[in-house]
Amino acid sequence: MTVTQSQQPVFSPYEKAPCALLTTLPNGTILRVNETFSAWFGYAAADLVQKKRMQDLLTTGCKIFHQTHWLPLLQMQGSVAEVQLEFVHSAGHAIPALVNAVQHVEPTRTTTEIAVFVASDRRRYERELLHARRRAEELLEVTHTAQQAVSLAEARLRLALDAAQLTVWDVEVTSNVITFDAAAESLLGLPVEPMAIARFREHIHPEDRGPEELAYAQALRPDSTGNYTAEYRFIGGDKLERVISSRGRVFRDATGQLVRFAGVLQDVTSRRRAEELLKEQERQSRERAVLLEQLVGIVSHDLRTPLQAVSLGASLLGSDKLTPMQSRTVSRISSAASRAHRLILDLLDFTRAQLGGGISVAQTHCDLHAVVADVVDELKLAWPGRMLEQRAQGDGACVLDADRISQVVTNLVTNALTYGRPDLVVTVQSSVTQDHCRLSVHNYGPPIPEELMPHIFEPLRRGEQQVKLGSRSVGLGLFIVQQIAAAHGGSVTVSSTLEQGTTFLVQLPVRPATTMGDLR
Image 1: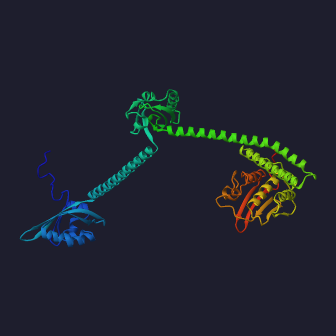
Image 2 (image 1 turned 90 degrees about the horizontal axis):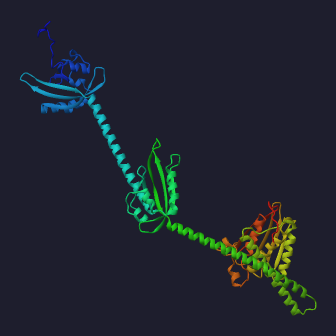
Image 3 (image 1 turned 180 degrees about the horizontal axis):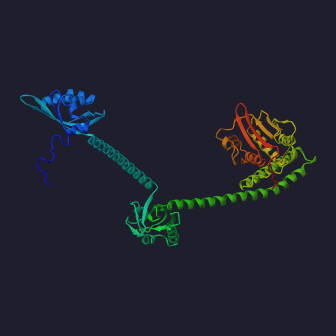
């Protein structure tokens, strides 16, 4: 059946326009709306025509804008293009829209033709575009910051490499070609250009080539850690031999395939020569020290026999038939032999201590007060005219090496008599408590210099006064005292002021944990 023209549906461009259309009077009264407007904003035409003004359909803010800006501009220009307003849907929500308006002035009346385009999608696109732009700007800033960080890191790495005199190398594992950075030319004496590993190895000393190849192959093994370390002699293009330390690492991807083999070279020639020189100096020092200790030990042992003969001869000469002059001479001979014997014992103890064996002690039951009294009586005879006083507190029973304690008292009291004021008393105190045996020697006189205090117990140290007096002591007395105290498991300390004087205090445990046999 043929459809006649009268039977075809009538299409109204105004009603079906792809934008909302409305016609208003100058005051905004709506005269006409199309179907698109009704569909978009939810109002029937009958509810709007002659009943509403266009501004009644706007949000509060847009009503103000319409009154203060849009309407004056329309009256002045006769048209307004792409002004964004918000209409209120019949359901109550706001719909953003772009509005175009043209004013028609006729003899009978003036009307305004308005076209409205919903801008919801456009605003969403604009927001997305703005967000994308901001995101791009942020990424650009992050990229710029990362590039700056990379540049700074590269500069720092270059400074570190230059400071450490390191050369970076990189191996292309499929072709076995190695490349270097610019520092290789001065470090290796070779031109900076890619070269085959085999050609590079031609410069390695033949004796070192095998170990280097083994370390390289082991680093490339799939089951290895990938770490590479080698040190070899390298003869550069300038014919100079260098000692090169090479360290590197094999890098693999997630599948285990080789990605990169890179590392650094360093010229350690000077370091190795310095280490060898230091080792040689240490060896020579050890040999000199051993020779000196052996010499001291031999001389000390060889001197004891003639000194014993001198002491025995002096004792045999001591009889009533001698004249006073002869008696004094024999006494001086005996005293000199005793001092020489003590010096030899100190040298022997020093030799044992330096050899690492320490001073030996043989601890037995003894009376500390009696041991001290015997030494004090002997020193009173050796130092006539000097005031020497002993103070004993409580019971003196203990377990110590009596001979070594006598040596401690002799050294400390001799030191006090040498440095103390000759017109004032030297006091020796001894006591035994539940935990410690204590022995102190005190004298008045000039205090020990502060710069000497940290080294007071070191061997071969003598005070300035003793040097000025021309003492024949070699400075082993206090060192021997400390070693004896340590051998007993104890300690020795010193305090020295001008007002309080100088006091050496030896503290020994009552029952030491270990007992060493006498090795003399």
